[in-house]
Every structure is written in structure tokens, then in C-alpha cells.
Amino acid sequence: MDTHDLTARRAKLTLAGLAVLVAAGLAAGGVAAYSLFGNDRSSQPHAGSSTTAKPAPSGSASEKSGAAMTPEKGKKVPLSVPTGQKDGVSTGFPHNYVGAISAAVYFWEEYAFLDDQKGRQQLTAVVSPDATGYVDEQISEVRKMREGANLPPSGGTPAGITFTTTVNAVRVRTLTSSELPRGDVIHIWMNYDRYATTPEKSTDDDPLKGEDIDFIVKWQGGAWKLTNEPAYWKQRTFPVAYFPESPYAWRDMWWQVRHED
Image (cartoon, rainbow, N blue to C red; front, side):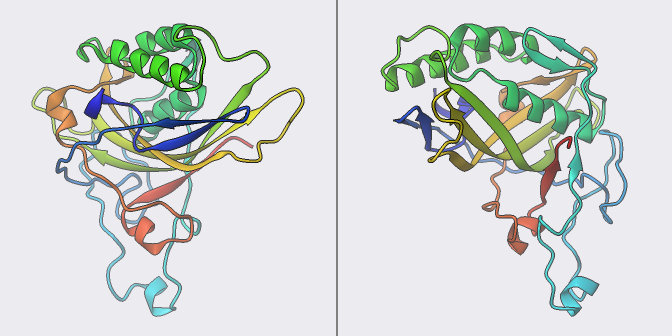
């Protein structure tokens, strides 16, 4: 499926002892960066804000003290609470940066990535009508993944197995659009963990940890929609590796996510 694959890189998926390798293609592109919380990272502008993201200036208080800023030291992104559910996905996120992030995070944490029928239902609910072929491409990947795990190409998650996906951090950029206001198309990288459990084993000894994936979302019809339109896809950029304690990740605008307690 090449560059339109949802998966960002090769990843090991634990399926009750089965290891599955998932390949991903990535495309290069340039894009201007915009801050999530403004230059001082203390406010939350509307998605249309043109505030430009900038790293902390040389000689800042944190640098003078010798304590370089890192994602684990910075503010966490608060997720907006969805106001509804439709076809297995949360809906009703606000028209701002946090709303865009929340829509992407909730979708990925709820996505039935191993169930082609439920996955299609979810994708149909959240994919832009302008993203021609996007849903079919992703379902094709689900079926390939199932076959790699020695499962029938179509079907649900194997009985008794439960997956939990948790997004750890996000990196956000605003993309340019000739049709939509600035801030209405957002590129979001997410770093996440995934755990598998069974009735016999409530913990995963070999979880998927620290994987990265990216989405492009645009504001359309009063909601954030996933898209892979070429005009936006070619603007994708690629982040430095996310680590909670990394000053490089902080400078690249990785933000930890704050889930509800």
C-alpha cells in the first residue's frame, strides 16, 4: 500500500505469542511548524492560529540552569472529551488544535486494527470523502496483517484476546491549504504502546512499545476527518525519535498526552 499505509514503520505485533511484521512506506515533504500552545506553550489557540512553533532560545532559564527541557518535564496535551459515539469511534471534538489531536488519539486508541469489518465501519465514519480509496487501502492492510498472523483474511479479533493502545506523545504541524483556513489541516505524529491480554494471561510480557504513526486530519463538515489527499500528503515531515527524557524530542515539539485519570 506504500505511502498511504497508516503504519509508520516496521513494528512487532504480539498476538498471543505470534509475532507479526508490518511494513510501512513513508514519503518525504516539507511543512512550516506551528505551536500547539503558543511560543510560551501556555495558551491554547484556535486551530486557525498562525502562532509559529519555536524551540527555547539559547540562553533560556532552563539552559542556564543546566536542566534541558524534555517532554517529560513539559506540559502535557489535555485531550478533549468526545460528545458522542458513531460506528465505534468517538465524535464531537472541538475546532481547535487540541480537538484535532484528540480526534486522532481517540481514533487510534479505539481502532479495531485486526478486525476488517469493524475497522471499515470505523474508517468510513472518520475518513474524509475526498480521500479516495483510503478506506479500502487500510482494510487491505488489515487483511494482510491477519494473514501474516495465520488468521483468515476476514474476521474479528481472535476470541479471548484484548488489545489496549495508549498514545504517549504527539508532534503537531499545520499544513497549508488552498481551500481551507490556516489551521484546518493538521499533521499529527503519535508515539504509542500496545498491549495484548487473554483470560489466562492478564499481562503482556512482550508488548509493542514506542511505535510511531502519523495522521493528517482536516476540518470538514463540522468534524475532524482523516485524509491522504496528495496536496497534504506531500507536506508530511518526519520527527526525531521520541523519548520522554530527550531534549531533542522536546525541541522537535513532541508533547506528552494527558489521559483522563
